[in-house]
Length: 210
Image 1 (cartoon, rainbow, N blue to C red):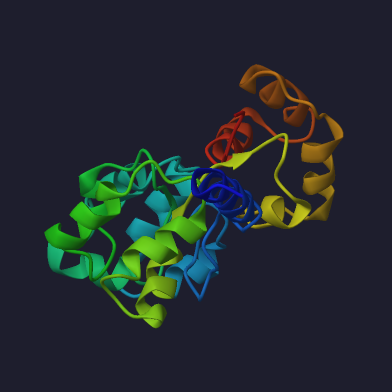
Image 2: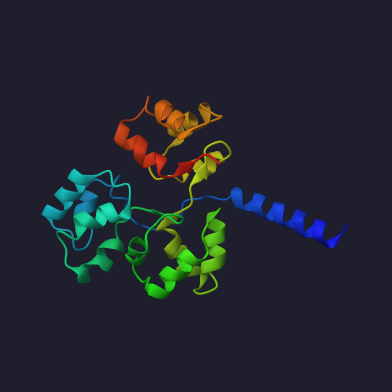
């Protein structure tokens, strides 16, 4: 086989393998403020009763910036790392702002640049590979909790769908039931039969049609 053909085949196989991996980082204890109970939020460091009430009132948060707007109204800047080490709204690696990335505890300007440098991300495995050039495996795994890559509604595996926060087996079935999807409006219409509009929009942040 010619070298160019071999390289092309290898690339195709590599990208196929990437697309088969989970697209939302494994959670290692972070609370999702859209799903956490009042008691769980109250136990998070740095959140007083007023902050918890404001979070409950403001959810669902579609972006980390939306959560931060609420948190920053109740918490001083030196408390952000403790709070975001306990609660977080996962950010889309391909559209998160520099400010949102910089809110991740331990991420400074240099690492923010590295997050953005490797866009577009097609799979979370790509994030692990590229950011793993700068930090060890444990730190990559910690950072991966904070991020995700949207899954393709028409090709994502059941396991990938289940990585979306708040999605269980029943909702996974509904995601798969209405394939093939031709437009996001179809997703919103069909999934809107089971959850309210705000929840549809929260779920829509994790998916796309390629």
